[in-house]
Image (cartoon, rainbow, N blue to C red; front, top):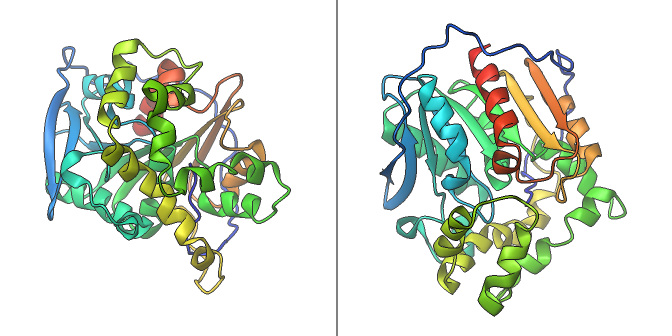
Length: 320
C-alpha cells in the first residue's frame, strides 16, 4: 500500500542522525501481564472494533494497522505497552470493522481516514497521544502528524515512507518505487475482491507468505476480510487512492510543513512494497528529533515479522 497526499512536497533538514540504541530504562513502571480486551469506539455513525490494554490513566498509544490485517497485528506491542503503563488501543479501521463499513469508494479518501483516527482519540477521552502506524496505517499516521501536530506526542511509522518521499519516487515511472507500487491498479479495480477470495483465499494467503504467523492469527485476518463485502471495503482504500491520483499530483496544494514531533521510522531491507530510496529520503521531511532504523533481512510485515525488535524500539522511543 501507499498513498500520496495532495499536499505537495517539501524538503526539511532532519536535526538528528542515526540513533544509538539505549536500553529501556529499568525504572519504567511495570504492571502484571495485561489482559487484552475487545472494545468498541463510536465515532459519529461508525462503530470501530478495537483491541485495548493498559491503564486508562496511562498515556494513550493509538496503533493503526495496514492491509490486509487488523489491529490484531499489534498484539505483541499492545501487551508490552500495557505492561509499561501505557493505554494501548489498536482499532480495526474503516472498512475492516463491520460497523464502520461504508460502501462508496469516496468514503475512503484520506481525509476521512484521518478524521477516523482523531475521532477515535476524542471518543476515548484523550487530548494528546502517541501514534503508531504500519503500511496503510503508516500513511494515515504521517498525515495525522502533519495536520494535528499539537496533539501527537510522538510518531512511529513502520514500513511506510513519508508521503513526500514516496511521491518523489512515484513521480519517475522507471524508478524502483514505481515498479514496487505497480499492483495499485490491480487492487483498486472493480471486482478485485474475487481475486483475493478465490480458491479458498489462496491469493490472500500468499500476500503474507513467508511471515511466520501462527495459523490461528492468520485466521483472524482471513475471517475478518473473508467475504466479498469486507474485502471490497478494505480494497476501497486503494480504489480511492487511484480515483484521486490526478488531483493528488496536480501541484495546486501548498507544500506540507515538516514533521516536528519526535519521530521513529523503521523499515525492512527486504520490504516488497517500499524501496530503500524512499525510505532513506524520509528524513528530509522530518525537522524534529528523528530515528531511522533499517532492519536488514526483514520484510514488510514488521509488527509480526520483527515483533521483538519493533516493540523494543517503540518502548525506547516513547520513553526517551
